[in-house]
Image 1 (cartoon, rainbow, N blue to C red):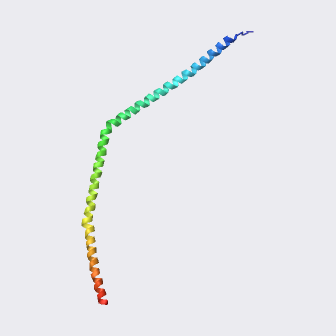
Image 2 (cartoon, helix red, strand yellow):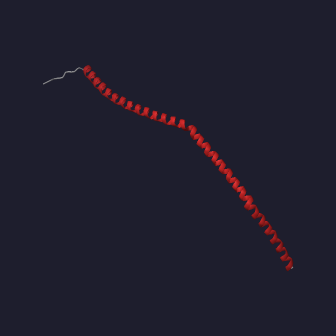
Image 3 (spheres, rainbow, N blue to C red):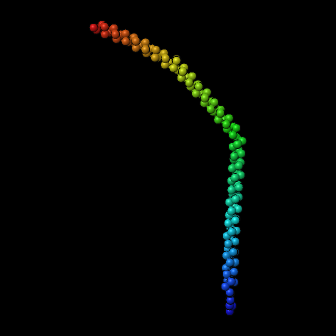
Length: 118
């Protein structure tokens, strides 16, 4: 039979060694996880950098397109204003004039009608 005879400092040294090995294993796992996280972060940053570069290259074209849309909408608003003024002058004003003439005529007719009844 084998007998083990340890002194207290040898047992403490053995426990420190086991703790060191276990701690080293966990640190290796942690560093591998950190390396994977850094790789993912680096890839995301590169993708974002490419996207920003693309946006910056197209910024001039985007602003020109926006300016074109604003200019075209301004022209369309001006055309609507001209159309409304034309309708007012060519349709509404003559109808109002005709209605006022008709009202005056009916007013004169009603005045004569009242005088005839009296």
